[in-house]
Image (cartoon, rainbow, N blue to C red; front, top):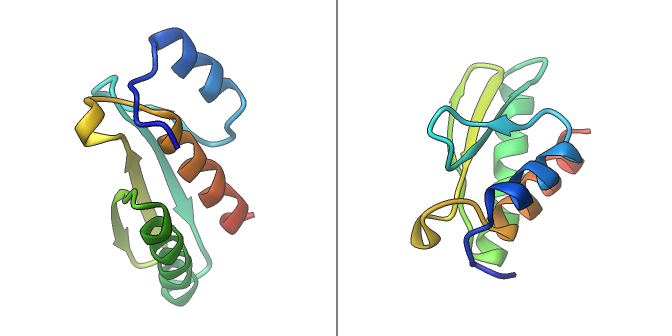
Length: 97
């Protein structure tokens, strides 16, 4: 997957088709919170995502408090958002839903 920084127009277009995600306050990341019924479900989600993220060598910035997982995605070496961020976001949405 390409690690070229997307234009602001491409970011807006990609976000339009991505449920639950929004442009983060920094303008160079996308963010979403996932809420589960309990800690075990939240941790299982994180484990599943971690294994998939390792396969594509792209890792989320995230945190977990009890049943909530907060995620921020960007591609550090590209200095912003790339297609890889949106692919990982879509994957997380699939695992969540």
